[in-house]
Image (cartoon, rainbow over all chains, first blue to last red; front, side, top):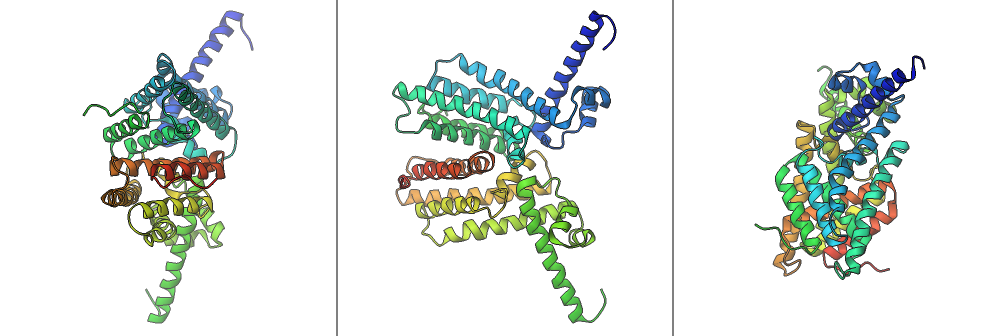
Length: 208
Length: 208
């Protein structure tokens, strides 16, 4: 720590911006190539900064991975959760969550589609802080779906289903949609998933 | 090529056995750690053979990866598909496929659960021969599910559903089951998936 306070603040601000850019780019790369082998060289080249600059932004690979999960969570909240929260709780919000998720994946916010769908299967058998962070983000997401199903049921809809089971189904179908998008059928997978989920949520079929 | 024919045959036989053991072990390791970074050193140590012996068994990493996919497919057929084919086509066979799959994952035939559920998300964004082989195996599996739903519908069951959509749903739920098994809840995930799928297949709830 040296120099007058104003210079220190500017330096910190620049450091924070670099950290943000590195984590955001790491999330994009990880959606395609996975988070286990995320490479400082690659991130440095992509961002046009020095490798030491990237290394200085995050002390350890695990710190970078955790920051990447946090950055991806922010993107998910702003693209999927926040828009849906503008809709009334219950079935309308569930449908809005499905629509926003399909738009988020279909439009390629992350080049590999859904960050979580790409990275959770990679870490599900790797105990540690990164898996814990992914598990927490996943609990948050399934918890939101479960809560909205419960609200729908208080409104007399989606009767006879367990909220936890239906939340599990919605999440399962979205993950399969991501796989199909990447593997074989980008638009067909999205439309199939929308049709199935609209039927599950009792909101009728999409227009032909 | 040298030595009398009997020695050559024995050598080839030993070579084939090594190739089989390497591919089978690679499938076990890949179910936990992924197939991208499968390590010859690791396989050699696990099998108690020399690294050069493992390297000689498969000329390139891609050959090893393709042999690993083929070995995993064989395991899947013997544990999941073959037992279900003993049941009548249609709904009974669909239920048998679900039961056999849940047993295959619950009993840890592969330490990471389902090989395909682990490896397909890893390769879905990596074009090449390995992804093509995974896609082909996946098409075979979804094709089998689709066909059995069609038979069930000819028998007057599962009316009103698209066979392709229901096959997609079954596969999606099984993949989510694998994730939950590895991530947080080994037995709860299996029981939840069984309950949901029995309900989808109209075969009633499991006994409490």
